[in-house]
Image (cartoon, rainbow, N blue to C red; front, side, top):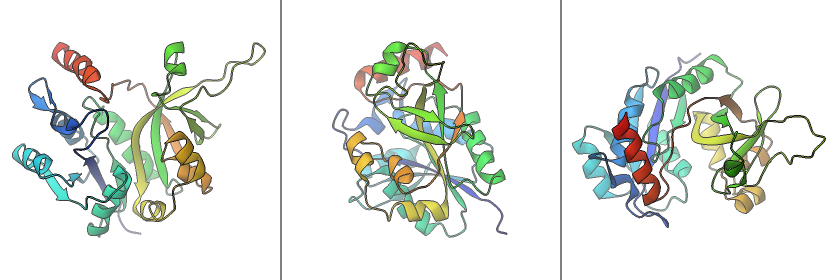
Length: 246
């Protein structure tokens, strides 16, 4: 059996409806993408870390702070398609971690947890992470993706809506906030990107639903990493304050 080799990829694009140029937005003296790269570099289990982009501005900045950069096609509709292009060029990798380029405070221990679970469990094709939600405002917020899981820690569903629905008679059933980090076997990732976008995926605008609609399982690690992602300039300011405080 081939020895596991896990590749970490940070997809980064310039165009963003809510926040154009987000990867190079300066936070606490560094571009956002550099914070993500530095956190991921602290992982002990990633064999290699790559930034995947189609933008020369991002490429130049990333190479200046020491990152390995792969230039990809500009036709990709998602970060998953972008990382699949890179993986096709990395013949010896067995697993891939998709690290979101807008998570500047991502915990390297969470990255290693996901890597270890993938390496130790050959029946897991796709993995992600989530943390329990205890704030009613978060539960009601459509910008916060929720998930519910079964007894084996596999995702039952992901939604922008409240799940599960609470009745006065129902026992406590936890709702989890999905963290946008994914791990895959190389084989599964290359299969996933060949599938057409699925109806639930298009309805919720959640790409991971494509796997569930095709009958695949997504294993979920429960984490206490509540680090904030950056979707808007306002969130960038909040994250900068947190970084400066730390």
